[in-house]
Length: 258
Image (cartoon, rainbow, N blue to C red; front, side):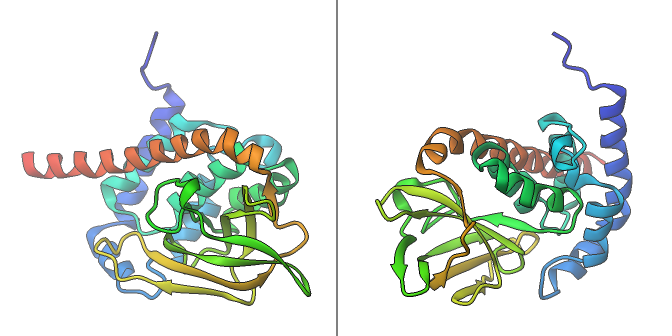
């Protein structure tokens, strides 16, 4: 089996390395870390809209480039080398993977084209505490209110949770089973508290939901879909995150050797 990169894959890697060397220099990273959002909107627009990186792992049926995990890993590795401050991992490495693997087709049609175009940022809350997928630790729950279904609960650590346009959240349905929901982050009753975490190149936030009235199309996956498909979605997100960490480690080694 040939594990060598194709010429197209080498081009993706080399283009990312060249762009990020300038756009995510040490000075640029330090400046982005000091901003309220934690990233430079101009650089994010270049990444998502001009270079089209957000479209990389998204199928052509949803206006993506139809590439795969290898190409995403190549981008993430270079982002890790340069500590890119951007909501790319939360949006593409995590949220897009959950949408692709877990969500119904209506949700894919609704959200993936906007992510591919770099027009929508998103994130996924995974458990009440921590950033691992812990379905038994989900305390968010749906109940029936006067205006329809309402959502209450909390998530202590959400990647880019304070700035994402779309929140993808696990919550217990009326029967107590964990389903998946996607809601605009601007809905009334949502509180997003930015956290002063150690690594300010990736912002974290605590998200609290207090009687949030859900839109009719909020549920994007049934408990059966969540149980069957979330492990694969999380594995793909972990692969992207591992590639980013590898890039950072390689850069440390290269600088030390030099």
